[in-house]
Amino acid sequence: MTEMSPDNPLLEVTDLAVNFRTTDGEVQAVKNASFTIGRGRTLAIVGESGSGKSTTAMAVIGLLPGNGRVVSGSIRFDGTELAGIPEAKMRAIRGRSIGLVPQDPMSNLNPVTKIGTQVAETLLVHGMATSKDVDRKVIEVLTAAGLPNAAERAKQYPHEFSGGMRQRALIAIGLACRPRLLIADEPTSALDVTVQRTILDQIGKMTEELGTSVLLITHDLGLAAERASELVVMHRGLVVETGPARQLLEDPRHPYTQALVSAAPSVAAVRLSPGAFTVPAAQRLKLAEEVYAEHSGAAGLAGDGGGDGSAAAPAAEAGGGAGPQAAADGTAAPDNIVEIRDLTKVYKIRGRSDDFYAARNVTLDIPRGRTVAIVGESGSGKTTTARMLLKLIEPTSGSITFDGIDVGGLEKGKLREFRQRVQPIFQDPYSSLDPMFTIQRILDEPLKTYKRGTKSERDARVRELMDQVALPQSMLGRYPAELSGGQRQRVAIARALALKPELIVCDEPVSALDVLVQAQILKLLGDLQAELGLSYLFISHDLAVVRLISDYVCVMKDGELVEAASSEEVFSNPRHPYTRKLLASIPGNELNIGEGELAS
Picture (cartoon, one colour):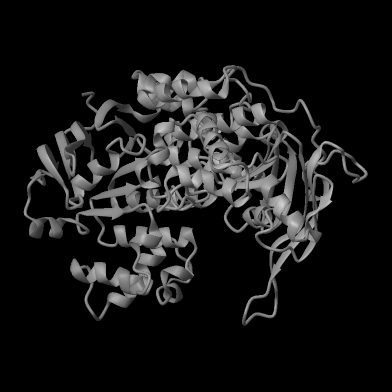
């Protein structure tokens, strides 16, 4: 292994092996992993889900699940062997000497306990405060973690915090005892890019002040390059490459690292060219299986040739915050499948005299066969706009026209037809599929509901859908829990395609996926668009992903459109300060990671 740290490192992991007991016997999750972390240094472990990165981190802090165990190897922390250490001794180290910031703040904070009480518990258990001064120290810790009005916030419950605030509370708990090592397991994966930067800056500031070393677990290569001095790449339980972070990502040696770097979305990339596959949809399965089988399939993700996505419907000027429109006088162009005009959604807030505008005067068009992306932070109004288009919520004012028909005035029969022509793909492939249904039943359900064909005809359509999304038909008898995240999202896409819609509303469809699987799904969406003539409304907070998939981009802030133009124009010449702020906040943006095969 490449030497990465100075003499007398804080953490030394040598030949670590971790197994899990399953109904099928022992499964090797980590195989002979070795790395070191120097004092005051940050090391990042990157890799896909299932690569072993989180398992390695949990082995270090002694928090493996009940069916997991360290079977061999050494974990030395400041000279003390942690592998096999009694739990009583490990509890004295955990929290006090090794802190943890876990991934999901909603599941890692007690929903029925006030934030201040949860911080106080950590301080009291580890002797960092007494009953007399604990309230004062709780406020100090929350303030140091960047929470404003810490005294008031300490009295609130987790559900009263935003995602970013909850993550700050976890940082406060993780660093409350001034640990020498902080394990940050995907600490910002669920956060918007600007909030993500704020949280990472806070972690960096606090760890620098405390002299704390950091073990960062992430699948975001840009984040790893920007925040870590050393990098460990894991694949299928193995450490496949180690070295200085930027050097490794700018000149990867191992084929798997090269595949990760090539698949990473980048705002420096160009629009993916839809329809790069020239084989029939049914023949994609072999290509997809090659990608799933091994990292050497990276070229299969890439597609051919680029383009700026500006060939068909012309983008409009962004004046007045409007979206891409085809005519300067505001008249409808015949190739727009959707026209949204002055769309507003107002909520009455109990106990407040002023109303909350979730969306205000949103105006945009979706050209037929093209992709319009709406980007912005949580609370910007992008999902509210999408839900109004889907008629899941009713607008307060404004109009939505679909294929020349006023959506607002649709009666029951016409609304039923509309729902067949407009379909959604949601963010979380784990919760958007019924866990009690087989894949066969999930795909058959919309066909049966809308009385499409006989049973044999529906079965044939289900098999066709599996071919279209490059999943083997042998999976039809499985349940969602038996599929990976990427496979689940393919099923969700297949379900959206079942009724042969013309418009698909994609609400953060790849944000829960690893970079290689994300690349596969984006490529699949592009190919299906070219093959079937689909139009997309693509909702995302990830500008690098939007760069790859969109023809036009609308930027929303506080319920309003602040910029809208072609994708090429928005990314090469952003006009609004908020757009420039979003672009500047992308981790590792200056490294141009991801300009490899996928982007070309």
